[in-house]
Image (cartoon, rainbow, N blue to C red):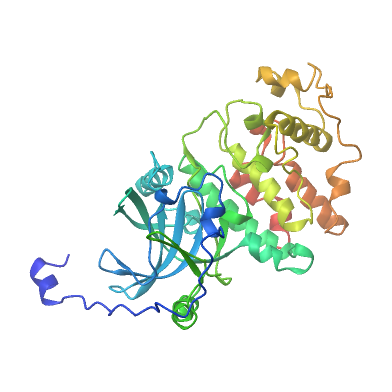
Length: 401
């Protein structure tokens, strides 16, 4: 351990903060909505009024905006003390309970070494910033590259080669295995929340230099400046599971969870649910990465009840009728099926829709193994789905070893 006297005799030399331009950028018309302003229920006073060039906590110089969401904005920072780049995720001040911080603290208490930990985005530090409207939780995190979804959209025909999908799923399953062994359920697993790790800082230094050479477009509303986010290039490293803001700690839960098109049937039907909902998501993720069209979507933006009916009708067409054991777990099933699993027709069943007919990307043997993998995950009964550890050893993922 370093002694107090040693610390004082070897003071850390901070890099001087760089000057960022105060002119030379596009000024966006104040009447035009941009970035987080376009989100539903946007409230300007909830967001921290960050400025590019500002130095936070006497060490983190903000050098670019990387993104935004309903609960935070994300900024690239140069650590003037450690001479490294970090991401600051600055939360809105309206969060009554920061679930993501609770999950990170729980994971930090899990001391067991596990290969999957490296596939989960790490929290380096957290602190609180005060603005004139309240307090904002701030996460210090490793910068990452683009999402798997963005990379997929850049591919020919919008789909990946099988080898890349298999590699991605192996990493996701290893990370999920760690979360599940730590009693954490992600609940929000899809290609937008899978980011590619960077292998060196040169991309980040370029983002900083670009912000000085060609500063981001922005608009000013009162004392607030809203910057346009900079695009992050792909990394060449491993996949990282991100965004634990919807994650739950514990084995059994109830109530709404998961993005609507990715919802497992037990969630739609108000049953108790556990980590098998993540395995449902893995089945849909595998499909989304390899096939041109997703299996499920939002069917009705106006009525949740109608949307659920269409969603369950499509599941019934693809998976066959649910077993009686599943039907008996919720009174709500009687809206959709009789006791024998026959569809009651609240909306029509889609015809000629099978997993076999919808899968077009692979040749015969590969297709059969891929469909078997998906069918081992998209099961009505959660306990029949493969676990993360079991799915990792499925023949489709281990082919050629």
